[in-house]
Length: 253
Image 1 (cartoon, rainbow, N blue to C red):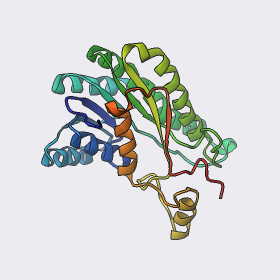
Image 2 (cartoon, helix red, strand yellow):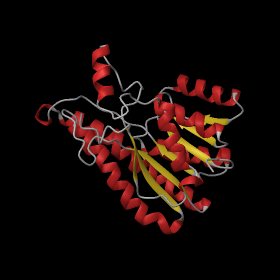
Image 3 (tube, helix red, strand yellow):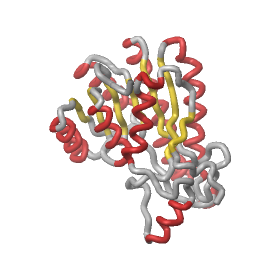
Image 4 (spheres, helix red, strand yellow):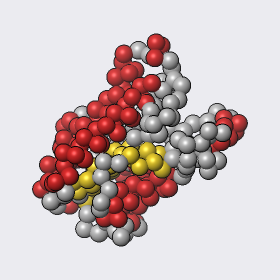
């Protein structure tokens, strides 16, 4: 049910964290994977690791805020592996945490471009490729921050961008449903990645305590939720904001 045999997938932000875990899991489930991030050495190591485990992957380093890079990723998927069936658009940045009046326009723009504009540019090139395959699954990494009642101090730009991804997801799902292309947003909670930095054990314990499960996720756990959305197990799921957040969005104590 969760097999990705004969599927081709793009995974962005794949040099570490959730993206890296998802690329490995997708490959283990039979997908041929195109991975991207800005760090070539880390991508090459990931491709070698996937190959050593019997999978197939290709890497192309670059900036997902660049339209040409997104086009090149799709070209690589089609030319190397024959098409595109799945795209996990996972790149994101929190940016500087500060009250809105203290943010500079350049800081706002960086968060918007990395989290939201990059998703638009990715989808712009991915959708035609999926249409050529007769359908596919688009996944965007959003966040519980800015969704429903979960507001977080100092995260205005991040919350706005991630909430925008949910809106983009819903609109695209409505546009593309008749073409067999499903579009969903994945909303992780706190996850043990490079973005989750804790200066003290007390700080980590506080963040863990915000979650109903009283811990933060391993990247592999979020990757499993992405696999569900990528696979035929979610064949009747589109336009959703899927929370994989350990209960942080509903926990009040």
